[in-house]
Length: 240
Ligand code: FES
Image 1 (cartoon, protein in one colour):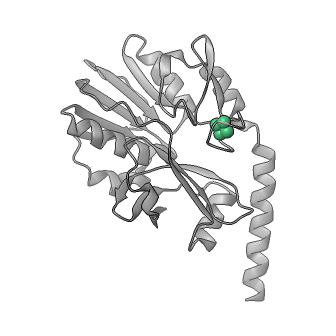
Image 2 (cartoon, rainbow, N blue to C red):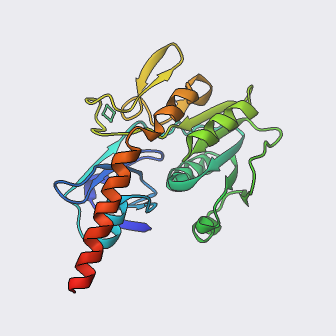
Image 3 (spheres, protein in one colour):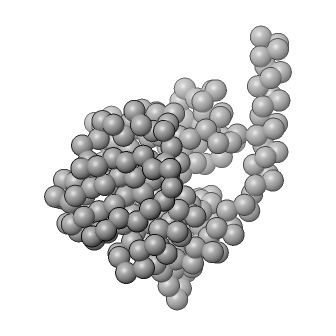
């Protein structure tokens, strides 16, 4: 779902930054990448995966809270040949970072894996936009970037052991301002917070095994929340 949201305070967001969306006072806070900014707000892409995103699709007209811009912008410099791997919700981050790097004169190859984003990606002026079935390595690359999936980031990190790799890990973010520690992850010899130190990190320094292990922390709660919301929707439709 592509959303354009009126929120002038987000209009100066830089490539690779994110915002927090909260539909109602009691809704979950969802971090999403900023795709584009406008004078009066921004656009983003939401993947409908659970209760909170479905709630936005079904009932979203205005948001209770739109927080940001958050996180550190992507380090947009000249690197040379850049390959950007994007999966799932990562497509907005991949596009915003890809555009910023293209402006700096980099050669951009964007690799994606789901046909669903073809219409959006077709419009981008990258050097190559490739729909792949399987993950593969490219030669002569100066920088690889991964966004949208932890296993993808881990596999790409293993595939390019001596190439600079910047990735954004998928972790739970409850507060997004450095207070709750839910987004804490092991980076090198220490720990960092994805919300305030990230969302972009040197992928070779991340403990991907640990990050992947934590992906299912709230899986059961999410399943119950989605089931309850689907029941609520069904009874609403019957009574209408
Ligand atoms: S989300 Fe709370 S500390 Fe990062």
